[in-house]
Structure formats: C-alpha cells, structure tokens
Length: 383
Image 1 (cartoon, rainbow, N blue to C red):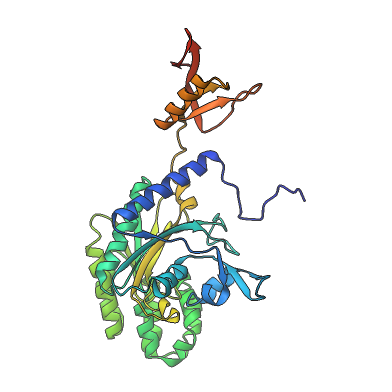
Image 2: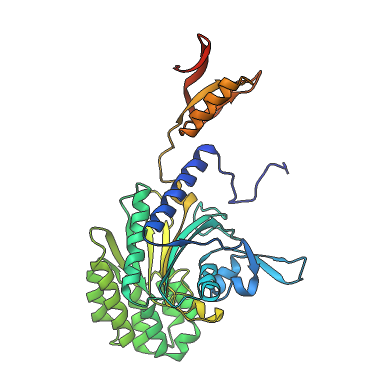
C-alpha cells in the first residue's frame, strides 16, 4: 500500500479550502463574541470516563480509544466537544450565573456521521449554561441562523423536535421504557414496520402514539395535529407549547416540526433541532437542550447549545478568490527589506522570489511587484 494513502473518510485540506475554513472560523468566533460568548479550548483527549459521561452509546461507538502510557488507563480522542465544555462549566468555572461559552477544534470519529462526511470534522459551537427558560433556546436558535447567514447560506431549513414527547409516552408504559434506545433509533429512521413490530405488546395508547409520530412532520400546523392525535399528557403538552413558542420567534426562517427526528440525541432533555442547507445531504448544524449532562461533574446546570462542522459548511461556499499580492526579488539590500516590512505592516502580502526559482501558488495573484527603478525600490502594477 502506498505510504501516502490516508484512511477512509480522512483527507488533507488544501490551501484554498483551508483558507475558506479558517476565515469562516474567525468570522463565527467573532460573531459569538459579539453575543458575549467566551472561548474555551478543551483537550484533544481525556480519560474515557470523563469524555463519555452522559454522551450515550452512540458516542461511545464513535470514539477512538487508546491506553495512556503514563497511567495505564483508557483514554479517548474526543468525537464531540459538547460534554467537554459542560465539564468546564460545571467543574472548572463553577459559576452560579449564566455562562456563555464557545469553542472550535478538530474531533475524530470512528465512523462518518453521514453520506460523504469526514471522520475528522472541525467542530465549532456555542453553549448557554444556567438558564432553564426558553429565552436561552431562542438565543441559540438565532445564533445558528446568524452563523449560517455569515457563510452566505440563506435557504436554511430548521427542523425542530422535542424529546419530551417520547419521554412522556415511555413514563406511562414500563415495557416501552425498556426499549427506549431502539425506539429513538426507529423513530429517527421513520421505520414504521419495525415500530409496529416492537410495539406489539405496548399499551394501545402508547402504541398508537408511536405509530403517529413519524407522520407528524411539517409546518406549525403539526403542533395542532399533535395535540389532537397524541395522549393528553402534561409532558407532551409542555413539549408542544415550547415548540410553538420557538417557531413563533423564528421570524422569516423556514422552520418545520418533526416529532420523530430523534437521531443521535441520547443525552438531550428538551427542544432539539437540525439545520439543513441546500446541497448537503446531512444536517449542517445540530443542537438542543441537555440539562442533565453536568450532573456527573457535580452540578446539574440548565444547558442548551449547538455545533456545526466547518469543513462541511465550507463545501457550500464558492471557491475562494485569489488574494492580491506583491512579488519581490530576494535581496539583502536594507532599503528593500525596509520597503517589504512597511508593506507587510500595512496589511499587504509580499512574496519574495527565492534565487533560481519561480513562485507558484493557488492562493495569491501577484498583480504588483517591487522593482528597483531610478535608484530606489518602488511598487509597480504588473500583468
């Protein structure tokens, strides 16, 4: 096997794409800061007990594990940064007030999350801790749409769901509760034949509701249909009211309700969402409320947030235009070195041609040059 081959779903990022990703990362982090979010940088790997706390079986299967040569303990390479940031809030910062945190960094996953997805996403996200009200969920929803708008993606579809609907049904049927993990998966896949099979011995009320959920998809009118079709349980009523509140706050955004879209949300406790953009088969952003993750770190803090993959998002953006640059010869002449220093200080890109070689690059268009004319170095348009 050639030594330059990379593992499946792992790829290098070449100059023009890397610049798109990095410029987008800076743009999003600056926007997070304008909302009051503070940047944190969790480590790339942790002891597995801490890394996977509250993350569920799905994240366990997607996490690469290794043995620490210093302690002999099992460690994991992070596959998601959400629980790491929750640990920072609960255990290290230990604030009693509302805390807004953001983060950005590479994660590594044993399997891709969707069609053509990378196993090494560059994850960026924002979280709010300490406020249980829907105002926090509304801010996160606004921040998601603002982030995608900064990437020039306007035709976004925001799919909302609420884990409270299924949890309320499971509370009234112990047999259904035993199949919780399978029900999450089958509902996410909208697998009606499998749902009919697994729910055969459930109570009639719960069985009917489970079979209705995959068809409860669409605009805000879905909420009224759900009130009519689903059992009159307080948990379901609260969930539907919260969804209606957030849909009405979404402004002109294209928002849909999907009461069965529970894929991958094993640790969520309330409203959840996926954001979809034209041209991508997978959700471009995911998020929701997860109030109980911090319990194992010593503090149960209300929490809601979102994350997205910068590499996936950059795929939707046009090819980055080449940046204007200045070509300069290589010389030890102090006057030339001073000229180059002043140009770079002013924000210009100056590329010096090394002796005997031409400069070749995809990122820069050298439309000007530093030339020696009439006893001094001057800037001249070329090409």
